[in-house]
Image 1 (cartoon, rainbow, N blue to C red):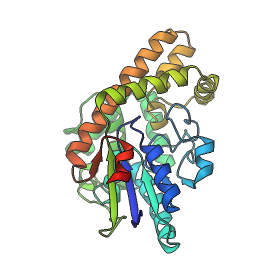
Image 2: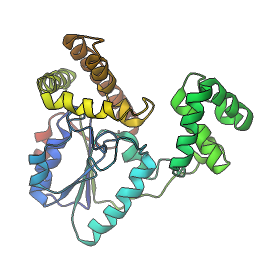
Image 3: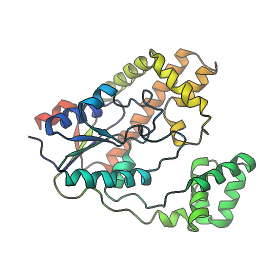
Length: 300
């Protein structure tokens, strides 16, 4: 019998963790909560391998596709959202099954992520306009002058981190390095928490990735999804535009590469991403229960 206060499931992309979450949820009348930073966006269903409509009909799913792709949704935003959900589920005696491959989300659940305040839309638009008009070098000089502590820790070409640090300093008057010293509240407490890391063999992961990508590229809906996203003219610096395959599909739609080149690019990027996920987990999730096969969980 499955009897935990909360079940956490992570693993590299294409490891089978979502199916495991579904199997567990059906056995314990639990609900599934998304812990994937790209599956929160409403325009990225197929390209991020979000659970299907049918799968979501079998058990309640939360935090999937609820954010507009034109919004920057941070780890802090996710933690604030899931906190109220976990409180509600705890009161209702419902088991939350939190599943996804974004390691920082899980770190945040245990209070291991800094509590940087949410940057408001006005500040984000301001710095986006500065970047468009004055360029990254101008922003980096601003950072050197006003927050040398952050500037000295960031590569001069790291656009995302330079803009992020500038936004934080501009809105709070405090260095992002100072904020990073403060960590958040522990949201999953107690000993009765099951932490599962699904990590199949390299060969199986690569085969799963190839099969998934083949299926995606055969779907008209897959390309329609990216066409809709492209029409929104979202800046490439936004998180939703950094989902693996988005830029490559846009290049394909613009006639800049062939279908075979597109397949190879997405395949290689996804495999590299899976490798990074596993490397991170070996350092940060070594106290989790690791399973090579999802069915092994029910035998343990």
